[in-house]
Image (cartoon, rainbow, N blue to C red):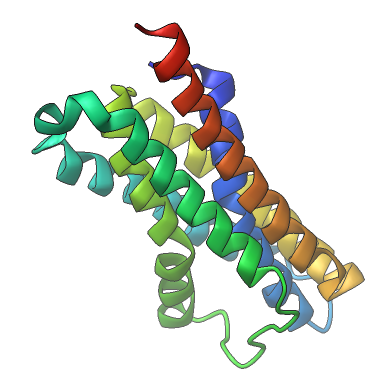
Length: 187
């Protein structure tokens, strides 16, 4: 069972994709708009809450069959997601064409939460209490996404790349932590 601190750190790492997308949303605003900030935060937070549950339920059907290597699966999934986030952090672009309508936000919400589904798969192997973990991840994403819209509106693209890079490093570090715990401390 992972601690609240570990789940929170993973939540922050997962929220960095949503944060980067939120910065882009903030860039497209000519002035601060709290209702749009809330819409983005809620959309991203809801998807980051739901997707780990989907991944968890999917993986729960076969988690017992690979119990002996579950820590390796969690490590590789988190590392793969982390390395992809680091790779994406090297691109300093934003899609300013998509608006704040329901369809646009849902598409971006799904795109930024696919990683959360993979983390949900890892959680199935780690016996994480998925509903409380997913709610915590969703709340963290909601707050960080709202912050992203605000910062994007104020400062521009300056923080997008750093956020994605930091998110990648956090997820890789959590994967390494899980692997070390299972290899050396849970014999």
